[in-house]
Amino acid sequence: MSVASHLRADNVNVWFGSRHVLKDVNLEFPSNQVTALIGPSGCGKSTFIRTLNRMHELIPSAGFAGRVMLDGDDIYEPGTDPVNVRLKIGMVFQKPNPFPTMSIKENVLSGLKLSGRSIEKGGGELVEESLRRASMWNEVKDRLGEPAISLSGGQQQRLCIARSLAMMPEVLLMDEPCSALDPGSTRRIEETILELKESMTIVIVTHNMQQAQRIADQTAFFLAEDGEPGHVVEFGATDKIFHGPIDERTNAYVNGHF
Ligand code: ADP
Ligand code: MG
Image 1 (cartoon, rainbow, N blue to C red):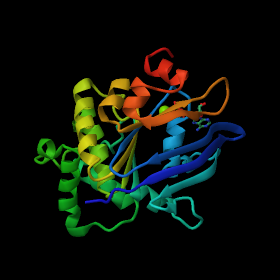
Image 2 (spheres, rainbow, N blue to C red):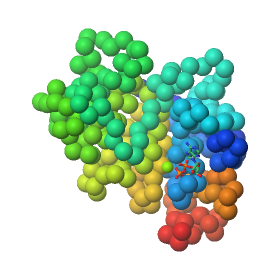
Image 3 (tube, rainbow, N blue to C red):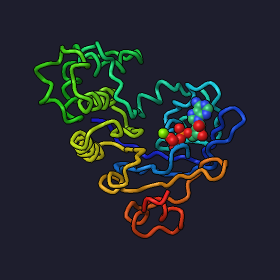
Image 4 (cartoon, rainbow, N blue to C red):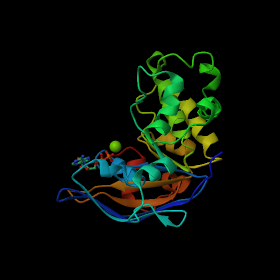
């Protein structure tokens, strides 16, 4: 079982070329908590969540300033290998992206293989544990050799979660993981997230206000106003953000006014 870690973003700033898109983001992600990132499209949520495991570095024009501390270590410290960072801090995206023709089992092990990690005893136990933690073992245990494409969209997304879990991450980042899914699949993933938080730290971007209230312990509201870079307007306990926000803009957003 992986160990939950405490993650903290200190003064995170991001530019694309000369355009400043995120300004001075300071957020804390305590162990065993789910944090929701909410805000209108284009306010920098995806960009920010990518900085939490250095994935924005895959975009050549991206510039970064700030620190991200994982249990006291800056993941941007010179000499730190971003591949190792991404083993500890996994990511799941909006659109399920398993390798379509690869088998279910091979998909679970694929992240580990790509990162060059050795896999013990053929990986059978790890595949089972990862699929169990992603709440889909019983559905697929008799069809591990079938291609991922044979699964439904919701199952494909849980397979992507299992692929991340196989790396035993301490933190799981999820960028709108349910946006492409039906309500039933969404519910199952929410249940999975609530089980996973017992053993890890979770950050999730969502446009679904009910979802944030169902699963998130704390919520951060991002906004990019009039061409200004995106920033955090308000951050706190989810109940407070939705039922007693301090900022009028938070109140307007959570009540569907923009
Ligand atoms: P959100 O996820 O909140 O919708 P994004 O993080 O995707 O917002 O985008 C934040 C801003 O950065 C937007 O103005 C977007 O157009 C810009 N942006 C995102 N990705 C890139 C990129 N690869 N190159 C240039 N600009 C980008
Ligand atoms: Mg986004």
